[in-house]
Image (tube, rainbow, N blue to C red; front, side, top):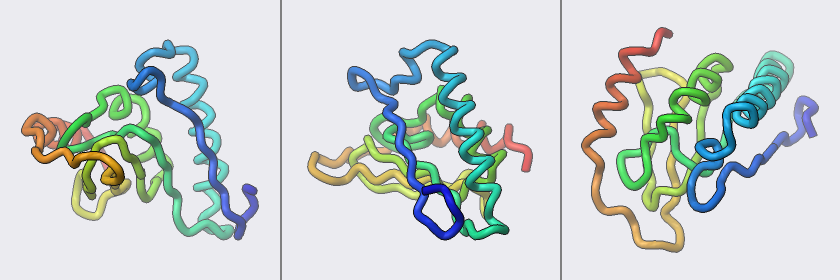
Length: 143
């Protein structure tokens, strides 16, 4: 695992008592997780010229979602800058019970995919405040 041409999947538990653990764990543990992810992305996503084509990060909670439980402010503040800095192609998440594909800007990375549609009633309505949050994030992004 970790060599060019081989699968490279890493998982890290990030949920506690039904809420993202990042909200409960304190800043030292969050900084440790973000540091680990940054080093992993630098090592693995930086290898695109040496064999890596795609860089994809997966997490349970959505960064952005138009229903249910998004947007997740702490992920916008602490994870999104890391995803953008390492030009991650896609962030895959679940939790919200529907399927979504979100891009902050045309031709921008990452793509956000939410797929929590299995095994539970779908979230039927869209949250209006998410559009405002996406717009604010778009305006604050410098490509």
